[in-house]
Length: 376
Image 1 (cartoon, rainbow, N blue to C red):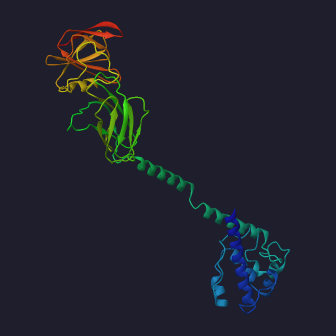
Image 2 (tube, helix red, strand yellow):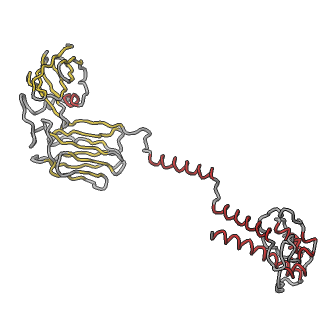
């Protein structure tokens, strides 16, 4: 609304400027004071009404004004057609220019514009306000919205075109001096859970943790269980962290590597020992065979290299044969035969390494189940 008033005043000032120039020309002195009214100016200046009509019609009057006074004329208002039914050249009739009662006069005897001409000026001022307030068309605005959406999508997309590949893995920690710490693969915007368990798969509680660069990584822990939630805040800033477990003198050291296309969604970190919540073992030893890392793959459902799948009947389980050794994956406990090595995950899955046998006894929910092995 404020801009509309400004444009209307601008148009009115342009008209007054032209009137003042023409009146000064008529009096023969450009510096002479203006006439008392618009009507008297029209009476004293023949052809002035015609010039006003030309100005309101958008015609160029600058050349005539320059020839008559030697000075440039005031800027004209935007062009518009003459009102319907009016004389396009009212200045040719002196009575029309001086009579305040003639509706065909462009300027009334009071010095005001004819109402019809005033309506045209108002419409032109309104159109100018709309043009300045809304310089773009609806179609151009829609294109800008589409361009903004494409720009925001491109800015949120990572440098690589595909989404990170999620993985869940199990790692056996080596706490011996000189051992290489495990690497945790991270990426910006994704959370990784670190689960600490002992050799029997029982949760190993966390006592405390420390991180090398707290501003680069965000860690969430409820100070009760054995799980840490880890998230990278920077795309490619490396770091490390130390985790102190309950009743374990040696801290667990981890290397954190962000910006990876393969992301560890969940990592089960297995400590080679019995924790404070270790499960009681029925037979065999609770310690894994550190020389045979194939149990970790079996625990994750990955067949050992060069293995042959076996057919099992009697319970839900998977088994593979490598030479004369069976690798068994099941959620139940093996009672017989005595296994050579075993690993358990935090979700209750068990992996066994045992000698070749046609029958395996399992404990399923407190009951003994016969598992027949076929496909040798």
